[in-house]
Image (cartoon, rainbow, N blue to C red; front, side, top):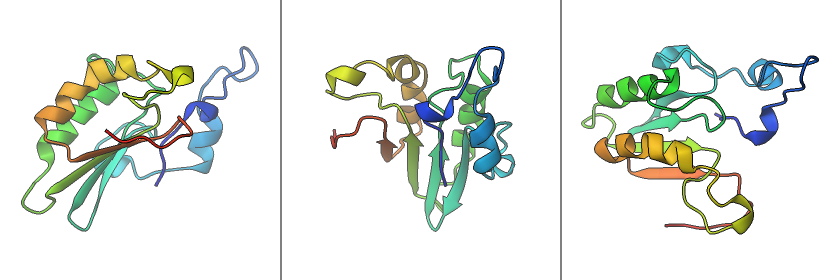
Length: 134
């Protein structure tokens, strides 16, 4: 299961104006099953874990489809059958790498409260090619 990163945006003005064309063609994820309208964000369950894949490079503010989907997805989680909730996204909300400092800040400001409120257990992110934990 995958979520997009910055290298999958692939827009070229006039020639390829629509982002994620190759990603969506190569990596079809089961987004419909989670009520998402986009292959860029979705959720699924494995054993006793609800896993949420968020899109760092698509709209995420409180008026976006992704934000509204995340709100509805989080309230549907049954912690009796899926006590663990894990979120994955590409651009980290916190990191000490100066080259990537603040790249996930707007998404953090928009969505972090939703994750806290839902008591998300673990968040994994990528993008920065170094190990950190917090």
